Image 1: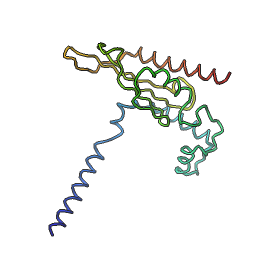
Image 2: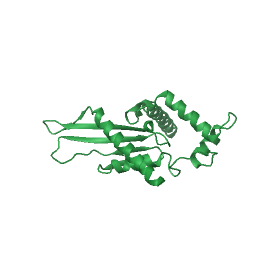
Image 3: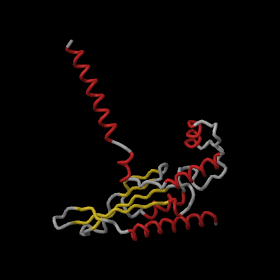
Image 4: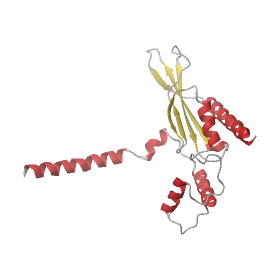
Amino acid sequence: MYLNIRAFLYIILSIIACLIFANGCSLEDADIVRAPIPEDLVMKRERERREALGDSENESFVGNIFKDITGLGKDKNKSAGTGIAVNTYLWRASLDTLSFMPLLSADPFGGVIITDWYSASEESKEKFKVVAYILDKELRVDALRVSVFKKLKNEDGEWVDSKSNKILKNIVEDAILTKARKFKIQTKN
């Protein structure tokens, strides 16, 4: 009898723990890491994807996912970057532009590059972190989104979050887009 009550309590506690963890994590929490894409841009990408694959209404959802993952679909408009899920030129340019910063994570299938905190010197009172999102397979301005985070050292020597300058974000985006364009021109020649 003791084992049955103990097993019953263990199952109940396990279910409660699962419910707490499942309800505690949501996609809204991830907005800090990845900024939401405007709805009209999502719809536009989906329409372009369907046109490129020649999808019809009667094809199954699982079949579409399989085509996307394996690349065995009817995609006739392959862009640069058949090995990864994002534009190769933007990917290379992002890695090249951010190469002076320590790299924390790089996901070529999700199109996310995350650097670690970087400061110019150990005496510097500010440090930066960059997250680059490559959102499309095409080389376009709206296929890249960069977030720059900044921390300042206070009088106590502790790092405190600070608001980053939009100009700095634009400079990083422009540098990446310029390099990507140069990479594309070099491969055409």
